[in-house]
Length: 270
Image (cartoon, rainbow, N blue to C red; front, side, top):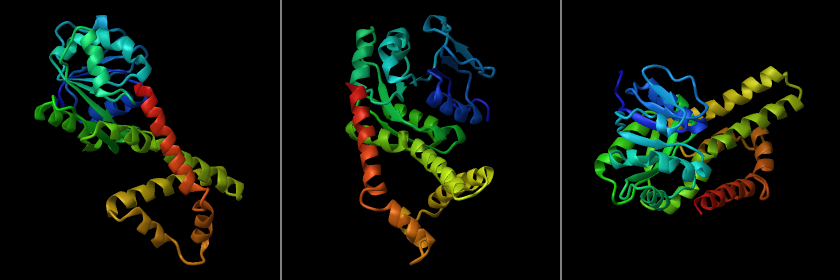
């Protein structure tokens, strides 16, 4: 239904911002403005501007979404700080803390701004995203409800009470789609190495990954139990899992990968 979502100011429309925007457009986004130096293909009645000084003076967004790269925060915050006097901010920048963003906005002339932190992921573009949020005590129930409503348009939404957990969230669900895409990529390559035609190897690898994900989501069964149900004693799956589940294989490398991503999220906050 047109206009079912309120008007937004989306600051940054790259991979993550673009993924969320696609979901919001499909759900009937009210006329909004996108601030991005590189994006052109914004359908009417929405508009895009290259710099903050080009934003319409009479534009009153219900929410400001910060979706720029974390390294761009210091550059962009002063230019949009005045909008935060009348609308809460939802930041999806990895590693940037609520305290750090609030302090930066205060330095830019907007003390007391409401900042809520969220970590979505790129499946938001097809309505299958996972977003985890943190709100400080200063955020109202209305602020939280608005963020939940908006983010629910592109997938599932959860909240944490401890902001420190957001670094692990970033490592698991924020970066997680890349791990799954890598799995599909490696399965395809391995299939080709075993003699499958390239197009068939690609098709069955991608469909297997997406189908397994859908089964896990719809069944609600624990992932370990689903794995056991596929694994017949002495069969082909068991042979493969003995390689993948060796102590120094997936169990160790996945933990190391998540730990590395979590450390990087903390570094971005400093």
